[in-house]
Image (cartoon, rainbow, N blue to C red; front, side, top):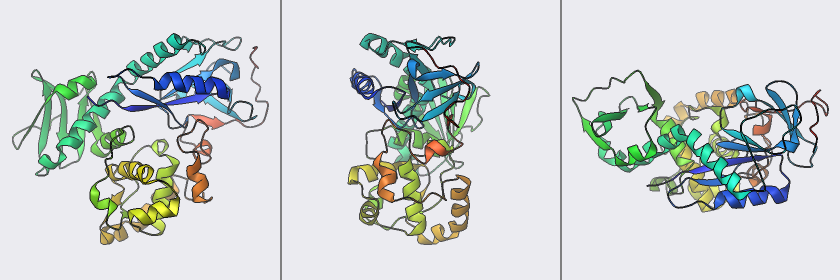
Length: 351
């Protein structure tokens, strides 16, 4: 069973501690999710250095990050949409049940396992995406697909509407063992307890976390165009995705032309384009791309990234690193916000 690559955001740690945490997190036993350090805004979970935290209020804290830089990020815990934990020592007056010891490998591993349990719905969506992608060719006729295990319905996939509904308690292993049934008489009715998702959302969640190359072969050979900006949460986009959409909106390109324009490797470009394709962003049809051009420009402006136009290479240079990216760090879409001023009235923790 394929396991996802989950992103770990490390905030406030010195370089030696951060590298040690990355090493421990990357040593994953077979059959478990893989962890890799990512830009904190794009990470699936956060580890935060407690001695880099200042308390502003009951739920609001400031994190001095990157370590030693003087930059500060504000985090309101009520806005957090992913699991997090603070490395001890915690600042005076700050209480959190989610903490660990950064100098203990066993403590770090226990925390990662807690993250994985919290992220089970995401891991189940990954499993659904993996199984769906493997079956798309046989489902070209459309219709409705029921995914069941031992007679229990786990998911309903409505191909004409490009929608899925997923049982919230379903586990990744359940999707891997389930039976997939397609037929014209199957109901598209969804139990009220199921979560509804677009298939682009499911396939994007899979594509950005798989180690497989999921870009169709024709996109390595034909000229590609921006079909649309994927209808996904804005903070899901890596800077690389934004750069590539801007490049294709400016001028369509073949795979090799786009690789040379942004200065990346074939493997990197294939991974980024694979996610964009399954998010619904790419086409090889010039006419359909032309019809969508005005809407795409409006969508890029709505994302509030259209005004950013630094050198392409510098935009991609730190993709996947520990440091927040220059574009996303300034965005309103992230729970992390740039702190205003050097002193926000917080209480500096004791070391």
